Each structure stands twice: as C-alpha cells, then as structure tokens.
Image (cartoon, rainbow, N blue to C red; front, side):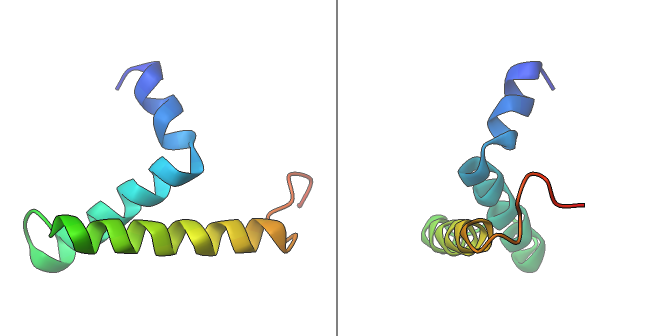
Length: 62
C-alpha cells in the first residue's frame, strides 16, 4: 500500500467504512450489500465519535 492509502485508512470514517465492508464480506462470504455496508459504516462511525467525545479515546490516554 502507498502512504496515501494509509492516510485514508487513518481517517476515522474511512476506517469505519473499511471495517464495515470487511465485517460484512466475511459474514456473507463475498461482496457485501452496498446499503448494508453503508448503514454499518455510519453506525460504527457514530459509535466511534460518541466514544471519542465521551473522553474514552482521549489522545493522552495510557
């Protein structure tokens, strides 16, 4: 992978979208449904934002 690809996956939303795609691809043993992937990606993203805003993912956490 190029450095640009790593930068994209470091982005919170794109990381959640990738995780959703992989999770559903494994579950269905193939290419997942586009709409199901989108819904799961947004749910994972919203959960990650909520976690971040609650202070559980503070940058200084040990």
